[in-house]
Length: 220
Image 1 (cartoon, rainbow, N blue to C red):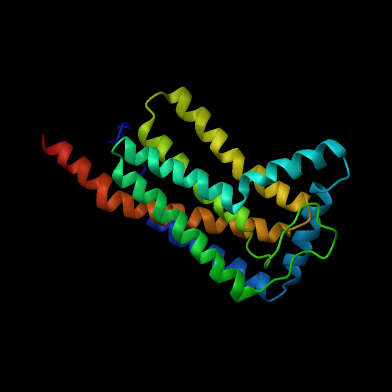
Image 2 (cartoon, rainbow, N blue to C red):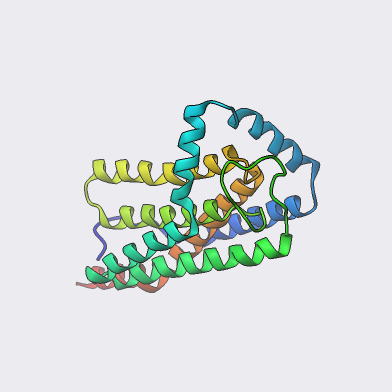
């Protein structure tokens, strides 16, 4: 089912561009580039403070990006799509999330960047780059943006939901910097990685489901 009259076109080219950007960013991080060091310091000086309200918000909101939370949300979304017989969208969702999080594990162990040495406001283990919270949230809410564009007819609700979905990964990434468990470059890398898999995943969805459906509809 495609409710929108003009679904997004193939995103393979943007996906490839994001692959290149991500690869360049990962190389800069892994090589300890002075640019990354300056970038991290500049963002930390803007984001971090000791405001108790901000601390309480960050420590609570960051939990929305936990691997367990993202996994549960993905499973719920998958089941809902299957229930409403949106099988192609269900497998698109599952494929993007599995690939994004699996690749994230590989890159973390390839780069082996240590977390910031300052006091962490929440518990975090494992390597720092890229931020798993940022990858997972960018991928999941990126998928929700795609599904919203494809399935929601009302322009008002479509716009509102897209704004809400886009805010979640931004805020989750912000909290990871604020609670001192990730460098800003970890978060940015995570966002780029998550978006990359959404774009590449949608390209598959477009070629193998949406485009054939549109051709079938045009013949009727």
